[in-house]
Length: 180
Image (tube, rainbow, N blue to C red; front, side):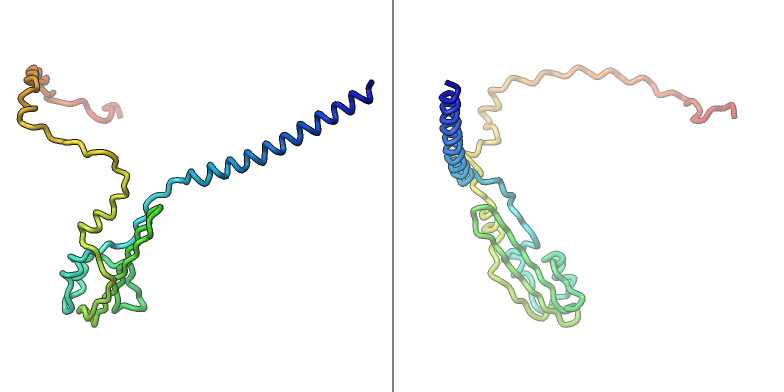
């Protein structure tokens, strides 16, 4: 009898462990399916100097470094070894969208802008449109009341007159003790 109980317990143990292994395999595949559907949030990454088409159109050869800096801002790269060259680099990375990269290089002779090498730059309006990541949902609410809606509002309650403040003291106590 003891031998049959041990054999039965062994079969139960074998079936239970087999079922557990099968369950782990299906759980593993289920978790990998869930992981493929759920992705972590990745922040939009903006680096460098954005230069618009309008800004670039305002920069002309013959301008001084100060004039160029007033229009475009400080360059991202101004090397000590390449003092006659300024580089403006802009990158924009967003999850699910191809990253954007634009480069602008200005070459100087002394203090005067000599030539410009640039990627095609978007206008400010085009760039602002590209920033909309589709997170908006629904219609944008009207943030202003019409004249008819204003008339429907109750009249504002009158505020009570504030009580006058007590008069200021004519003298103040000393800051340090007098018994020194």
